[in-house]
Length: 378
Image (cartoon, rainbow, N blue to C red; front, side):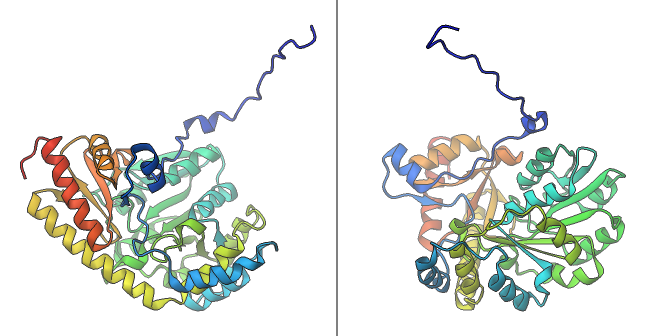
């Protein structure tokens, strides 16, 4: 080969199973919209973040911990596990901490799924469940919803001899609907003990319906139950990426085998411990969410727009036009929302409930877009 001639390189073959994975598309960051559109005043109601910002106690703890970032974090998350164990009345060995609950979902797949297995999940739900199955080469059984709600009866019937795992988002993202305690009990009775039931409860702190299940209380009699929760939503720590799983010690020990060391950074651990104790911020966040939800309900009804009553901090709305077009038009007005076509719901948008001024601005922009681009007189 002549000197300087290009070297032909054959890249290694990638696993064919990952070719089915669609990269996750998050809500646009405020800075990106400002940079691309030259708009300074931008609000983000797309990613279900807490509009009040982070827990003040969490921020104080983070700042105090910043002087120790030259030291590796506690790989076992001892103090966070101790705080959560006391908060939840469980043993520390029933807990696993992740770089967001997304990482725990991925670890569940790595620990339990093989190409010979299947997972059961609902349609119109969080896309990471499908990602986990495809990453591990497992099959997917997607069960239609019933009235935009996870249909547990149909999911129980979908469980077969190859089923290894069932994913249930409760309340469900993006619909905001939920399954109650009685429904879940019947479902768990019907599922074989060798099938893991993963309850993703990222929004459970926002729920105010008394029929919502107390899944932690179910753990002693449900060895195959795993519960996921997060500090990214109501606690306002989305940028620190810290979530946790609760389950029986044998299951948690298996997940821990595939956990990377130091997977949760020291700032996240310190902030989460403090935020967990910030009851005042928690109650304030709930109150702001409740008031904003009622305002948006009233406005959607006034505008004649169909929506789903929500037990979370977002609302799914039927806007009667192309949701991508509407999302783009809202961006031009400095309002970031989420088109729900990525969830298989074209014509719908998902809007995060914000502060009073954010909710009013969203409604004003929505009316303007629907009248000018949707051909609707409101």
